[in-house]
Image (cartoon, rainbow, N blue to C red; front, side):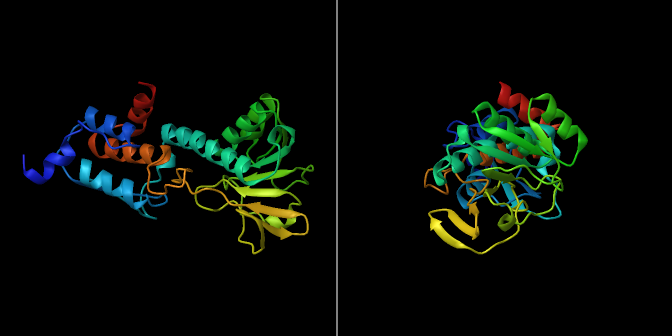
Length: 256
């Protein structure tokens, strides 16, 4: 094997934070270099370089590429990881007591569903605003109040938008604390405002926006340290270039 291929063909010492990716490479070893462009935000420099140097996978952000969210496995895992990020950000950045709050969660997809379930399990009174009838049905059967993105909303302390099945919404009209949980910043319209505390801006007389973490934000002040989503995307990239049914293989690895 050529010397420059030995480093990424060996999985003896998996990089910190990319253990799932290391497991994927170990299960499907290869000495071929590959390039894959995802319709997804770009990886931070450190995990992208690790993927290239360790496993020969160059991962780029490509608006014409495949969307990894099209896979049911990655989409489900993404939703759970994103839910954790958003709930933690709300707890850190706002003075809301979440178990005593009312939250309106807007969106049809898995991120909205997972955030709604997580908040409800923690004691938050949750209203689910979804356009898709099946999404409203699942929420109703789960014991949540339901409405649609275009109907008059009940009063809420917190509005969480996801960009899943709805156009960007104007946070200045909410009369609540808002956060954009979407991956692509498509849940809220851009709005200027005064920063009233770190990560929180006033955008209306009774409306505020709290900053959402980026999808690859590790949340510990180390922006280049791979987080769970980075690990999942690198693992999926490795599987996508080395085996069939990459999304199903990713689910199997997580369950292993």
